[in-house]
Image (cartoon, rainbow, N blue to C red):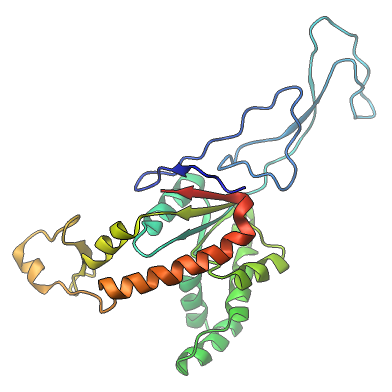
Length: 266
């Protein structure tokens, strides 16, 4: 089941409760069990002292009043695989930066990946460019292939990955599942609509420096800067509410596939 509690991840590093330590009677985790953000965790199998060790050269040890446990095998934990989703102005970019810094994951955003593939003139990039030049949306199958190939590159496989803002629909999520790509954790950033609208509507851009300001939370340093600030054409209350509606519909579709590994952060 998805976690019913919210994690406090507004501007700080994420915090997820780790599972309890193994006891002699606990079962080792199966391959589908996620160990949140515990990249150094090493599962072990233990046996009582009156049981034979699994190694051919092991011997039965004598019984004692207090049971003694011996390590039979130790396996290196798999790299962490995380997906994160959040509405416009939910702070997703900030959280992605904090998570990748703290856990050493490879940050992969579908939009950045698409632009990089086009710039590199890869086969996927060439196909995507043809659609974009005609003013059409890039088909799901092309984007899914880009994402799949990036997730299977050595750095992603060795360090683990944080997939940012993708998949955005159940069909995209199902396509990744068909390639055997499934996250250990799906983080959903939840922020009230009133706050999101306030954040978006108050955003301003300095066209000279490219710096983003907010009229309330991060105002310009002086009147000269304030006088040249511009607002994006779609940073209006009407437009942002439409984008939020689309986002919520997409998230509901995706959650149907990841409900057992979803953690909500608010």
